[in-house]
Image 1 (cartoon, rainbow, N blue to C red):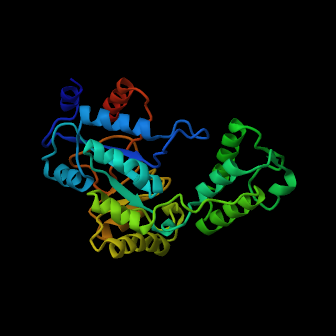
Image 2: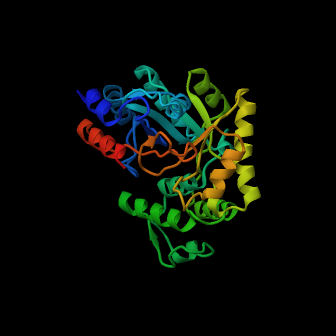
Image 3: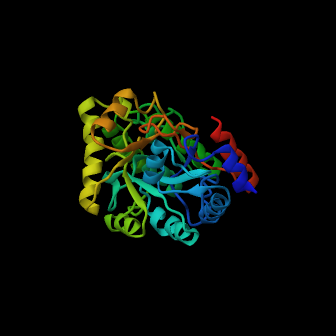
Length: 319
């Protein structure tokens, strides 16, 4: 029944619409710090719902068929951003069990033991033995509150993570990473170095039939970079993945991905000029024939029930 409903909402052919889902991590078990994030049980449920509702395609095929006007009814694609190790360890077996393809956008600078700046903050707060960071411990970290930063319980740690990430998010990349590292030192922790995939795991995803796309080297806010720096971030990530996999990389995802805030028309033109086939944003909605293939919208399915998921998917088709 759901499949016929979405076939009417998202007809095939030239009137077709493409729903693109975005994920980041798929935890093996629910994360107390981020209870709304997807874990293995929820991701398996989403895969069940997608099979019931949609015709899931590899993203490159979906983009090509959108341009040609030959999308099947209820067309959808699954994507992952950043390159977390649990994409290989947890998400891949679930995708394989359901017979579903997905595209993984990799920030290449964090492969093989790297760690994204926001995960430095998250894991520092998660693992800190301290009940609070006092004023003296926060000195030299511009933008953070002058008073104590409580870490006494899960709610306090979630609030601390939100505060620190909010302060650092739009700073220049090098400064952002340095401040995150200094914050972690104040938390008195040893940080994990296995959060992101290895090059071998990226190759294993590709060997399993999944697609790989570029997502810059260091995940900067492209809108804040000089043109030459933005070009290097985009082109180098593609070139590194092509060297790793021995094949052309034609898909790109803008970091953070909000049009007008995280990337601008100049970066769209840059991605096009660098020879990519398509790029995805994080603007909600569904892609339609005649839309910009270098700003394909995506949405995150946070819903916990099949009915709510179907309702969100339906609303998204009419954005």
